[in-house]
Image (cartoon, rainbow, N blue to C red; front, side, top):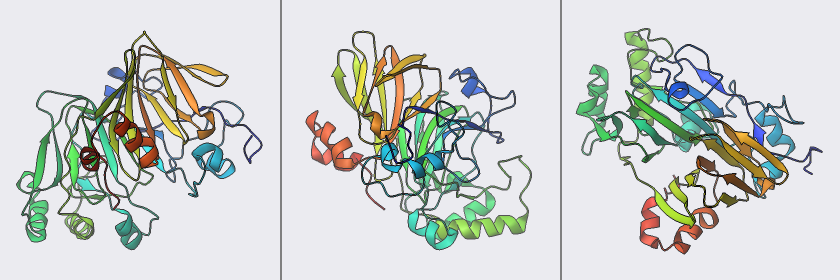
Length: 359
């Protein structure tokens, strides 16, 4: 029993659908997510404590409580021992880039505090669920590009002259530090995990909400702020992840890890169930067929493209295969990432390259 008087249990949360201009119908048609509106959906916010877009519990005794309220009343039960934050630290989304996202960036922690008046920035990671042949992403400034040259190219919207264009392949993951200019699409379907924040600076001459034009004075002001936040040295690359064979036909893949979040993809056949123990909150998102999820006495189905928040006090979870799920969490990097990978035989120099450093 936690401080709020209610024992925590797996939480189902409300989903916010965003009708931005680059969206389409892939989240419903290709992932099988139900309950979405008929109009084009660019993003579904699966687990959010962002002001104005806070998830609300939809099941059990805590139904109607916001994620912020649950955290306030059950901080250690939800997040595990030692957590002192006042808001849930992770934001997760499905993103349908049927069109191309605007070229933009999100501030890092220091810049967010100094220029945006926000408690933290927004480092993020993209896990590619599906992409058309030849799909690409823009991410990071080309080596040798100066601030003046970058500004001039952004003025004329000549993005390929100054930004790195990377090939995009399903199953790979890109960790995007705050301050990194980026965009992806078209024809790309992404699962995104990030710090809890919605700050961003855009380079486009159109608004992503409705495609309406951005006037010259506003565009110049946008670029002024963007250039104050841009990191010209960040040049991240896609990675395939580090795989561990857990048991018969059960695979655990570490997709990315750093001080702000870790993301794993677990797959299981029918020879053995997927079993996972944990000590901090886990965001469990199903990217395959419906699965049966068990933890303690709780036993329910998790449908296609649905998300479940598993509080730390659950302690472990069992999922009957066939299963294909994503698990995101705030890691203790030694315990949750380095330890399992070292035990599986991965060398320490490789882990130093794989695990993102603190800012």
